[in-house]
Amino acid sequence: MTDVLPPEPSGEVEPSFRHELYPYRGEEQFLSGTLGYIQEALEGGEAVVVAIPSDRTSLLRGELADESAVTFVDTTTLGPNPGRLVGAWVAWMRERGEGDRPVRGIGETAWREARSAAHLSELRYHEWLLNRAFARSSAWSMLCPYDDSDEDQGALQSLSRCHPLIRQDGHYMRNEGYLTAEEYPFEAMNAPCDPYQELSYTHGDLAAIRSKVTQCATDAGVSEDQLRKLAVAVTEIATNSIRHGGGRGTLRTWSRDSTFLCEFRDAGYIPDVMAGRTRPTVDQIGGRGLWLAHQLCDLVEIRSTRDQGTTIRLHVDVTERS
Image 1 (spheres, one colour):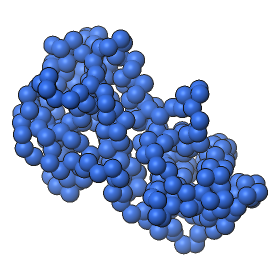
Image 2 (tube, one colour; image 1 turned 180 degrees about the vertical axis):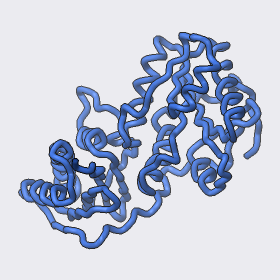
Image 3 (cartoon, helix red, strand yellow; image 1 turned 60 degrees about the vertical axis):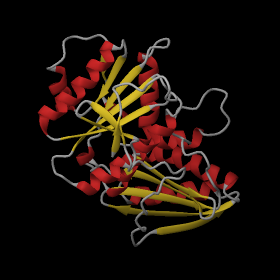
């Protein structure tokens, strides 16, 4: 990490989204970094949106007066799926940035509450995707505090790849560890658990796909409400798979650690890494299936390359029945 930059880019720097990672240890460092960032925003006439865990919210609120330019939002209302976060941030930033008013976000993920390795991987991917979602926006910037008190350098390095800038001592610096590659280097997905169910499908097999998933999900203990949501998501993904994945594919279902999973594999390719991450517009063609899947499932994993095709996994958390 090199090249300390001034608090604001100079006029010669091409406008772009400013995305900073802020590693801290303890409450004192958390407050000094976030309050300094907020003060910079207020002095510049900017609005601030804060989305952090509840304990940090109470801590930060206690240090702030009733400042109308600072808004606290609750990410828990979005549910566990990180795939919903980009769309939420777009809405929050637009709402606070009335006219051309610049907006700063402070977003701290509750990393230690990750439900699985897959969930943790998708949280990191979300952080990287923010750079793509807001790439050309000079009006928005974001600070991502990260509690480094456990000194897990591997975790910090993985997260560092997702942030082009890093904040230290009240300044941000270019992060040499930032990953600028067009294709994110996904972590390998775990193999399906044995025993798993498998079904090859093609045109005309949509009813068979829905029936197979419903039966397997019921056997796994998925509730009726979850089944209804899953049925919609499965219909959307299966339809897209048949239509855009070469007319055929493979369905697999299994359970792991109180989670039901169904996986669709086909020969298609999804070039848009933002597909399904932002709310489709009224006149948009395509993109609604993945958006619905993200809204209806507890986690959605997408792996798509030109040479290996596309794999989409839908996760549903199995709630214990009383």
